Length: 368
Image 1: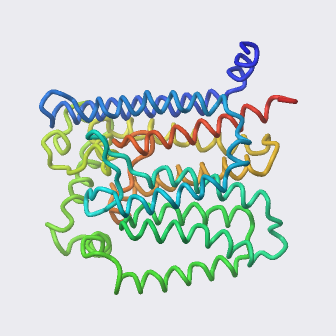
Image 2: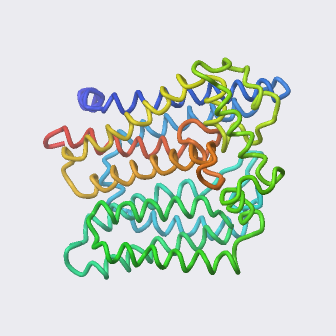
């Protein structure tokens, strides 16, 4: 047993794991800074995030030790579970920030859509690994699209536009990389444009429309664009080296709403400056590079598609969050992976890394 464990440890992608752990520590430091200045001294948010990190690391270790073929074998059950928890949260969930997407237990909240992101990666990796994509591509597009569409519909009923867009982007990104014909991809974008127009007229809530309008016409209303304007000020105020940890006026004096969540990038920019941003982006780049670097070494298509999907998910969430903070994208409530406050997202992101490491380790070990 110990020999087997030692073999697993030796074959971990330590560059990937170290980059993730450093980003997690980076995020904890910033959450501590924001919590200390804005809280009552009890640091409740920091303690909760720390608990999520510890629990997430334990689960990540268990997943590294677990043969990833388990997820391949039981992917249908994971998909059914994803549908079940999305339906359950619509019935029994708690409303937070106009979205009925949270389970609340003993003052702790869990956002099931974060877990659905992991289940979607497993579903798509399993489906594409077993499909002959050069034959009947329209059929594979319809089947995979239907599977994703059911989840998107349930998420939009909460409504959670940001998470729905992230799941769609993961699916569409995988379609591009697996080589679906361009005419099909163009057709998907046309359908999205039509659905978006209909949703704007009949589905989207007023606050969701306000977020889009504040992006399209950012100077039309100072009150409507307050969050984004404060984030842009924070990003520009950091200079080269920042104002120092705990000395960012926008975040510490509560000018910047949701500093620990949606606008964590702005907090990093203001307190740690260009240097802090560069370090953050470097570690994100290293994570994405290591996930993609390992693709040629993976023994099976399921592992390849899972790592590719994980890289797309992390990149899309990072890109979206940074774009929100800089006024380049509408505010859709997406946190910065491994950095923003949120126990649900932290747990799931560490679980994704755990499965990715399990795939990487077993691709290096012969006759495992």
